[in-house]
Length: 138
Image 1 (tube, helix red, strand yellow):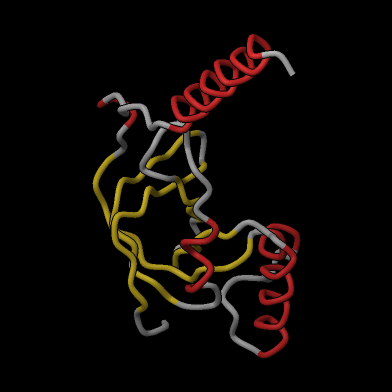
Image 2 (cartoon, rainbow, N blue to C red):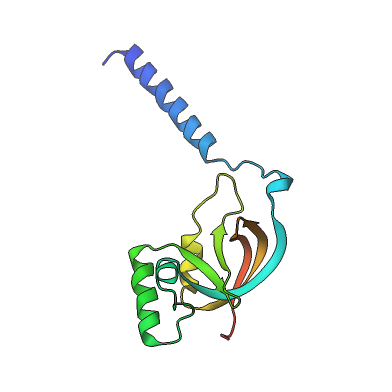
């Protein structure tokens, strides 16, 4: 392989790495996209069964807990269901947004208090979680 070709490959690789690093940087979030500070209390669960099964809510029996575990293991998105029935989807604190599933996994099937930034649009609710802790159930 010629030294010119090796040099070209090194330059191309360096540019590729630089572009990748730049693409992964978080952009500052404009103030009008920060949401409102707030706290929610709810039950962390998969969204699939909740949206498909009108009687689903919190896992009050073994069958419901089994369904949640199966859906979570299969990769169903997680959200926080409040006592009033509002479903809060998790958002990250960065732009571009990053997946929050791993962060919520330890809380699946548990009651939590989540504090952060709240968002609402067209009846959809979301939270950018700053702090989350397990609390006693309802």
